[in-house]
Length: 116
Ligand SMILES: [Zn+2]
Ligand SMILES: [Zn+2]
Image 1 (cartoon, helix red, strand yellow):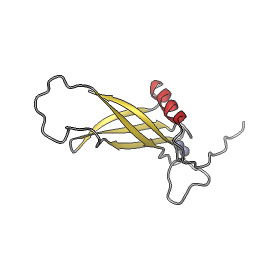
Image 2 (image 1 turned 60 degrees about the vertical axis):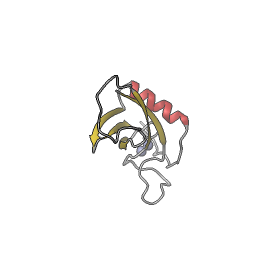
Image 3 (image 1 turned 180 degrees about the horizontal axis):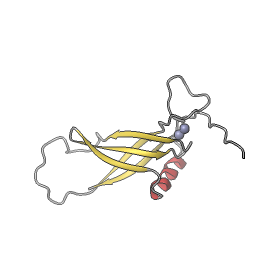
Image 4 (image 1 turned 60 degrees about the horizontal axis):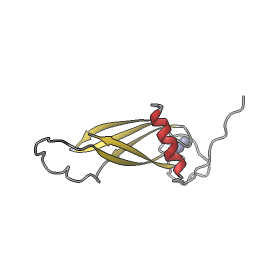
């Protein structure tokens, strides 16, 4: 039994983390839960980081969506919208070479969420 050495901190936005995150989502290991905060749709991403596999939680506030600031005018055929969440690993695991105050392993990835 050998312990896995801790991964070094590395700022990376490699697409493979996005692809791995997608796999984790499919396997329901990584979850995205919507919540409301002041009218804007927000999401909590929770699960293992695609890179270091430490548990992480990331709160995402979607500000990029247009037309949500105003009052709702009827609910006719609301189109589903794909929201892209840029998530950065925020695990509390140990990673070598991490800069002062940095959290996580430095990996960033993208999750696509379809809202209704
Ligand atoms: Zn980690
Ligand atoms: Zn990580």
